[in-house]
Image 1 (tube, rainbow, N blue to C red):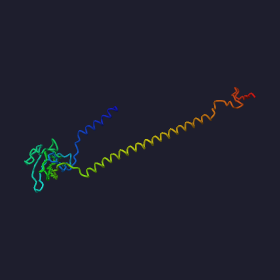
Image 2 (cartoon, rainbow, N blue to C red):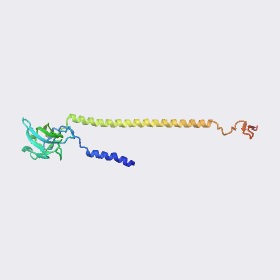
Image 3 (tube, rainbow, N blue to C red):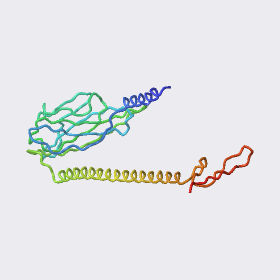
Image 4 (cartoon, rainbow, N blue to C red):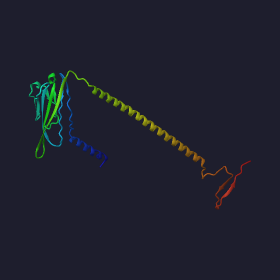
Length: 244
């Protein structure tokens, strides 16, 4: 098997696994401040504890205006169909939850053109049936949203401080990264200079040793006698005299 084929095998397995995976479900609380004359999403998420078990769910929304004590059904979603029985919300509610499935996990709805009268408490009820091999298991989950209608959104002190701290943390991390890079660069540069200095000293020492040591293959012309090999095996000593 070639190197290209070895690389393509894990890539194909990764693509196959990604195609079989579904998005993870995370339960997040709904926002509670809606701006008058604008749209607002009423969040309601109920995740299945057993994702591998097939299920079907329906969602029902009820509303209790501020100052009252009873809930009134305003919206229902079942079998991919929605119903708005309360005329106060007729043509002002839209489904904003799970799409093209009866296995609902997101039951959010969207309010169009929020009015002051929309202030109050909203109740979301999930009716879910888990289908096992030999039986079905029914569960009910209830979520409550307290909606407050305001003329415009104002940011709280906690939100402002958290954003400031986020930017301070980002800037601090960037400064620390620059300082760390400069430190590492200087350390590596110093080690490189030290290695070059040691290499130069070693090379100089080797050259001095080579110059100071006489070669055994060359005669010493500074001495008065030179020994030459004799054909008979004995060395013949010649005396070289220098002119006075």
